[in-house]
Image 1 (cartoon, rainbow over the protein chains, first blue to last red):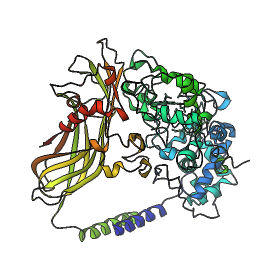
Image 2: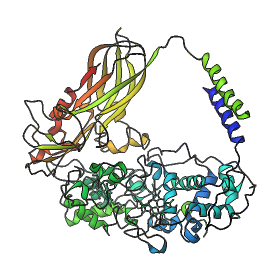
Image 3: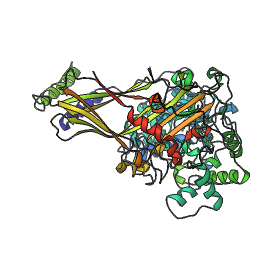
Image 4: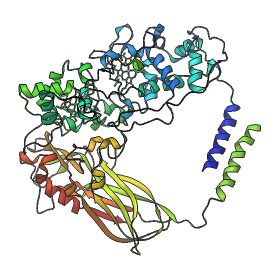
Length: 376
Length: 252
């Protein structure tokens, strides 16, 4: 086996050595293509090992995009840099804002020129634990493939990747950073793939696991208030109820420690008369099956108090509205998840469940300088 | 021309390097075991099929899953069982998947007299916490109740039309599990594996058979019997017993 690996590596080396650098891209409307220049500086990235607290599951690493210190740092810059958007005027971070746990406070995302999208911005924490495809509908299998899309989406950053690449290659800073992260030697070797892989490396490091809940349950350094305790023990997680009693059962789909199972479900939002009538088909659009219409990925509830409005289309402004929705118990649509049953909630219980949800806020996440803008 | 040489060189080396590793007689076979889901006489189709329930209601099944522990082949000579897997989660949850899920294992060739597994999560693994499992692991938190109730061994979830009005608006969820429910299931059946022309092994499980054995049918019209989670295991004990009794092994 060892031997085969060595031979393969040799073969790959020979191949890559015989390759010419990519030809320059042509683009009529683009600024003039700069000369392809050699890049100097360090070119051996340092492996980065993603540490997560032991009360979380092991993260899912992408072998096709190993994490490195330089790759993560480059990705962070690209994430915050407006040169990724049209006219160098829009960044990922304009929608994914750290102080709102990387959301934007809007029901529907607003891109360049305030153009409204069709879905609500997702919080991009703990993506390293998602096995099931990204976006509300799971449209993207790999995290780095996802990052291609916001740049060219006309409702988001509305830019041609060709233009972005030209700006990156011309920059007096980025070429050295790309070399440091990926070992390239010429500006023409800066590609879309390397840019999105760097962004994904940065996103993988955004781990949120230091909320009051974690400190109470896993770190044993704080205590629940009576109200939070009631919300946790008797409502959010509880299954052990008297026969026939309905219960919130949030834990069925939002179990600790991730608080979102990342599976695709219809959680009872829309009163459609047929499966073909959902205005946003969600997973059905991706899988092609009408039985998947109206199913969306169960997101994490970590930092939920920071990420209003709620659901894929931001239809609920507050967590109270979310609880009212679940208490009402869906609309009897045939593909609704059977764990959506409705339940009754008195004012005290409602306050308790809200207090519990608020205990999932990780105050250190929104201050963590590793995740903040490198330009400020 | 030059690049041809570089292409051929590693290939040559590969061939040369493979030879001395090769064993003259193959002692291992790839065994694939098919897990087929059924509902009565029909293949299990998630959501897309409408099934008649013995007491007159209709069902659309949204989820059927169970854990298997210590899946093992039993050698004909009575020797030590061959462990194929410590834990598997067999699951039907999507209209885009067929009724058969296949798992493949590498096993010694030879004569066997049966196959054995535990239905559920064996106590040793049931004592572990989900954070010991990777996020995409078989024993992740999604099938875990809590520190005292531990893993959910099997789930049946469906939406029922109780009134015959074509509206499937009565949710049914049966979540079962506990160390006490763990059940070992053994099939006695001779088969031989030699790496070629091996038989196809299929383990069949029938959702309807877990709910009804013809004489006794679980009463889904009773509002107290529409949800069994965590604490109410007693209500589902006959579902569990029927589930454990209905597995079939097909060797073709």
